[in-house]
Length: 254
Image 1 (spheres, rainbow, N blue to C red):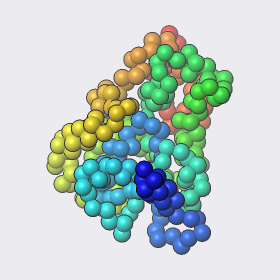
Image 2 (cartoon, rainbow, N blue to C red):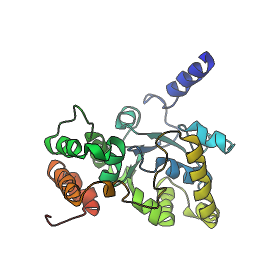
Image 3 (cartoon, rainbow, N blue to C red):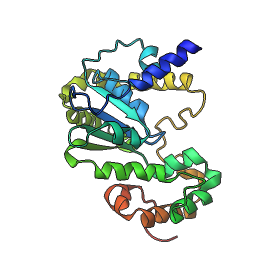
């Protein structure tokens, strides 16, 4: 047990290099709200673009993948403070995964708390429910230099994977042609990834497995969906106009 704890502390301590150290190359950061497709995103880079990252060691260990740290390394976190502390916006690149806010927040807090969720967002009261976590990530992305940032929508990643990952690979500085072999066996990779996650994750397992992009939204009523959207529009108008209008379900009042 002590050995595992020591290894964990070493891993955390070495996860991100100090800002004072000489940069090897621009760092690549992946910021995501939980359940926004980060594991699938990293799976594609590992097996498609043959890139490695420092988090989720269990993924490459499961597939017995060699780790080559001479390649571009993708650092992943669900918390913006990690990148605010260890990344330099004028040099380092940031990728942010965005999924429908209703799917993310309902998945995290439960459909039974929909009234509290809407109230929290509408009144900007985060004492009991940290619904601001999702929107704070988008605000962080919005402040990152445009030339060093890339927004990836979960829904596009599922529906148009080749187009999305070709853009991602080009963004990190590679030729998208390296994805050809991966997409030639795309269905096999999807099955392998889902099998691994279902076996590995004892809690918070994939529910819809990418087949229903509105799974959690369907757990609340149409009026609740409308109220949810209205709360987001009024509380985060700039973020709504720039990034979230695609998720509006009912443009007209019910």
